[in-house]
Length: 105
Figure 1 (cartoon, rainbow, N blue to C red):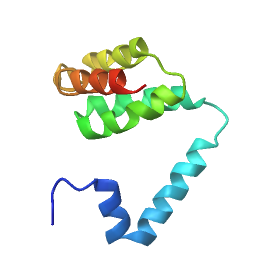
Figure 2: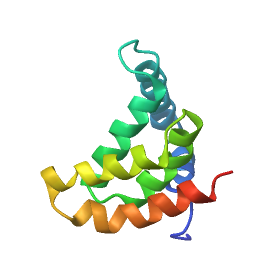
Figure 3: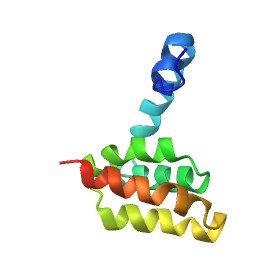
């Protein structure tokens, strides 16, 4: 098995019923009226950056940009993690997140 395989695709292949339930949870959370799509993406990216999860951060950058998020908002969201997690998320996630943002047309 290739370790470079998309982890979400692997999840769906290996545990389709669990993945379906997870997708349902995401859909339900996405329809809650309290936050708009851009704000949800910024929060998610901030949480994942604080955890140092580069792959999750970069996977959500296109969703943020599609929701109207700006490069400055992305940068500042990751920088906010300094106050809760030190430099780990910033040094691991910020370069790749901004690179990914700049790649998207």
